[in-house]
Image (cartoon, rainbow, N blue to C red):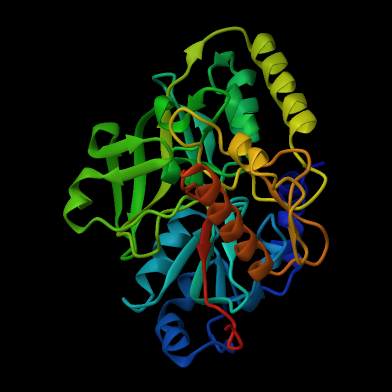
Length: 361
């Protein structure tokens, strides 16, 4: 069982039995006063759970990193909207799915993490034959659902260890297919809790890049995501909460066999026995990041508890006790070495967020 799959299996137990406590009418959490004072008037309407000082190592597939000031597990999309409307306008927000393409620095995260996996789980067929899926649906579940309904073309989602929200935010893909090839339209929400339906034509879509055309004037640098944290930059005005996807009619058994073959290929070629965040770097035009890293003699290179995988050079694994700093330092070393030896600058797919610790040099 992979780290992401194990985490998916244990999510329900964590939400129901972990440190998170249901919001009550009294609303007296040990959080910063501005947030709790804003939440109190709406607390009777909220059905999710609010936690404080939550170690993000439990919610990222690298199993490393600092703590989030607050984490909210919404009870569903409607509850998420109520929660967003309760927040101060300057509250930092970070939406997270499976945390499978996310590195949180050891100093932790200011603000609130929105935990969408285990919350935005709706998945059904529409009357027009399209598939409606919310942002917290894992790729493997989406692939199996499509096959079960005799739809083909969703098989590649089983090879992406993340949730749909992150796949939409970065146009995630593998085995020759990409997420937005299947998108009809998307549902988004802004930090004010306002819902919008956007068409595919509303976005500029490229390799591991998605940006709403209307936002070009205030373009911000995109940090590749996850389906590691599976989401747009927290400063972005909207996050993806659902999508309508179109797949061709076909034979479900053939699709299930293809899913099985892709999963076996992953097991054979990727270091799934150790915590990792999937591919660390985007492939440069006309080449492969893994080939360049291996060519530079970096396979097996280790910094603290972080190591360039011996099995797949574009993976960095946590060998046991890696800190977020170990992983980030190794990412930087790989970038610099490859650029020095080949002249090619590799760009991370991984989203790196959070604060450096107070003793950071």
